[in-house]
Image 1 (cartoon, one colour):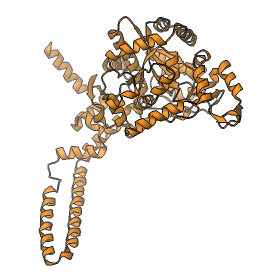
Image 2 (image 1 turned 180 degrees about the horizontal axis):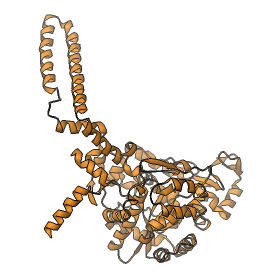
Image 3 (image 1 turned 90 degrees about the vertical axis):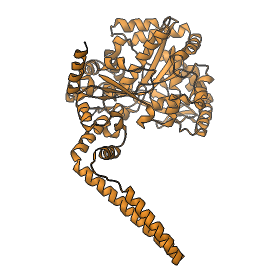
Image 4 (image 1 turned 180 degrees about the vertical axis):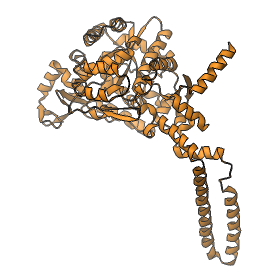
Length: 536
């Protein structure tokens, strides 16, 4: 596998907000604590050491041991036990429970977390670092996680279940598994061997990354939620969070940035069997939207005290919940996640919780043998394919045509001629000047149309080559989107069992550039082998 890197800005795929964070622009520094550089973690280690208490560690270890009951794995159990040590910290990423892992970038997030821990261990050898995957088990956006794309085909899990997806029964996966090509044994064992989706996801993620020491946590848990009860009371009864978020949003918008998330007066859902719905303030207390359920203030306080698992934080408070129950140093997220975390620093300050280092996940594109062979035939650089199809076609034609397809000389000639006519006409009758100007515009427009016709005619001559370019573009950008946001990792894992190992080897979590991973075509591989043997 070969590796190329290109700047994020050259991909034309990221917002200026995200690029400014990556480039550590000074105007964004008030919205986070530490820029994601290895040397900056010293401060985070100190702050988290002081704020995360031994009793919190014991609760965390106890919960994780229960969640991993039935999974026998020495490395992971050693990782879990290490969390009771005051010198052990986590690096976390969160994601929905997409079926079969969903799009490629889920795998990239996990790889980034693991490699970040490895780099931190090298830099701070007296500490231990545990990579964590936070399952978004309380999410209720079923339509966002019930499908994935393999070999160009969309596969969907059909179910009429409602509420928190982590609690869904794994019913109906047999039919879907039988439709899939290739080896899917990891997923078959997970989905058919577990009753609920969260347990199935834990198992398949463990199968893929357990040997790397990754720990999976499900925060839909009574013991963990009890540690969040003070925030529940404050947000639901006092409704202070919205003030802090709106102040930050106004500051960001004043700087020209578009914010990612909206804060509500109450930032909790009511969570129950087949139900996750917003809580709103009502005249008599509180209500669960669209359910008819109402609660007095006394009843709400009783829920918080006795069954806090019935309350689920929304996107505003989920990050705070995470940081209050984990000895966490950094959060690994995509562009949208990094942006919305930048909206939340004042919320962390309000509750005296250290704000984690925001690590952008690794980004990548995989070029397999077949696409690499086609790519080489086009003669175009792979980074060029981030441009639009029309740009690619025109660029190839301009380089490879034997004809002059431009009308620049003719345009200059006509412009000069009409300038002379305009002078002549105005000297005879000034009212003729607008007429000459209109004729000038008409003639130049005609030239522009002719230039387009010449280009279209040349494209027809080279239609086969342009078809090859289009095939490469469609393979690397399925449905016009980045590959990592569309294709599933099985596209590559089924053909290369070492695919994840290659990602771990090639991705650098502190190198903020876009990775292009290339499986050289067979001809290129043979050439490389021949050169290698000649140099020995």
